Image (cartoon, rainbow, N blue to C red; front, side, top):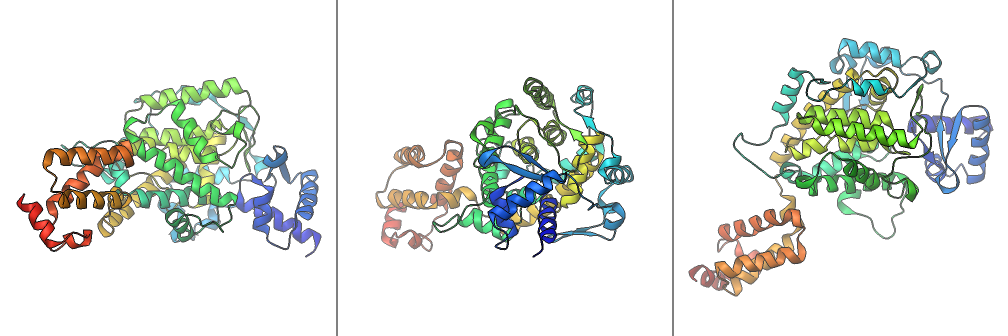
Length: 462
């Protein structure tokens, strides 16, 4: 392969990745035809040519494309965009005003005005008086996302725990995909559901997906006591950045400048101003009553501020699910969103402070997610708590039957098992599953527990 061809291959990969990428991940994506020394030399030349920017130092060095002639236009996308199994026309997702914004933001970067962080924009937002989502949109989302009866009161996170495995796969896959991750949905499912074997090699893409799993589980497991706070946002960033950023940058507001690829937006650089603005975002977000408005506000403004050294958009996407998980509505998995459209929506926020494209994508994706999750619950119907603790549950039931344990001691035994082996936030659901099994057992099903018919009949009589 000729030198110029190699350079073009590097530029094409950096463009498709659309984010900063480390040397090891870059070489892995380029393949065996590129060795470490060659890639470093070509990157140095591309930096001198003003086509690539370098950030960080040592093992945390990352590269990002800053000059590209590859532009996507609304005209080219009108025939339809395909991302995985998703195909849609722009005019079916975006309102006319949003299409105008997208057209403007997809002009060559040298024609777009350089801008910095606009504090006046967020200061003008008054919680519960200012809305990014119209009343009609909020009503439509609430009607589609509600999964509880009017009089039914359930602990926060109940619905998300019910569909946890599906949520882990969908949100991990789609959020990673929007960052340029090349894992397929099937590969993501295998990784998350089957785990890693000793021979499996960790790379940046795999770590990205596993970190999403940790962050989503943190959200769901702690839903009852979770709130929109500085601590929560930093914890989510910490989990998402583990192993991908230097330790001193994990879960902490940055003290260095960052650049946004393909954008004329220059984020703040002063650490104290970043801290103050992040606190301002969180304070306003915490006051918002409507869960969908609160979700969209977090999605937009955490990414806009860019408070962390990297992994800001991922943090905003997971944080956007805090109010949805707490409200027991369908969470947002970013299903069927095309990566280029998402980037355009974010660039509209960065450079124009226009949220309408992101609003349209949010509503489109959420409604599609609700439809998909209805099918999931109907077709799968599994209870993750039952699956997770099935061995403990079955052993308990066997012990209760064989030893003819009475109701008083039965409750104590179940509580002891909870204390020993069940996560605190899952204990009530575990107890319920044990008691339900004891009520539903019959002579025809008890053999699956290794209990004889005689033992079962003696326990029933006692």
